[in-house]
Length: 175
Image (tube, rainbow, N blue to C red; front, side, top):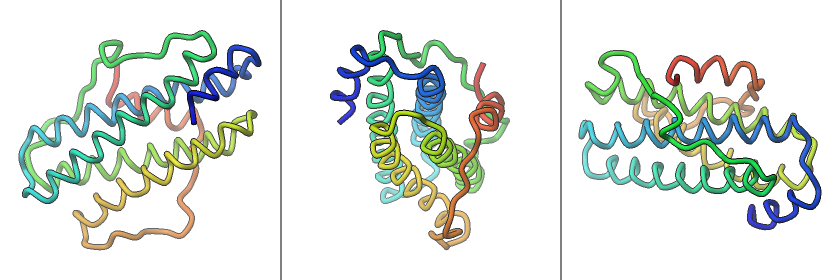
């Protein structure tokens, strides 16, 4: 679906605000992929949860590819992992609980980022694909909520987060 959007972006330029959201979401997906890579490598979970972590990592990589196509279709070069230095508080990957706590915090930001982007974009054709990614991020958040307190469901209306709030939240983990 994003291939079509990427192709049309060159013919019909996207507004600067939409490109700013796409750049932010690319950064969020790179952070997410790094987090899941480290969570898997920590080997703090049983086989079933390790499998779900691997699926979440694959999802985040697919999200990155999709959102990157928005930028490349608009003639911009999307960021890659080597453009960032990812860092986490000490002990973040030392136990199941610390990983789940960080995972829940990050996924709440990622979900809020997509919801905020959907609310703020000017290009209607982007809303559907971004909503589908938000649904996936919600599933990831549910994984962490289940791990933390056994309850996979939270509020009925997850909150969107502004582009500034997402950027500020990600600053704690990227440089």
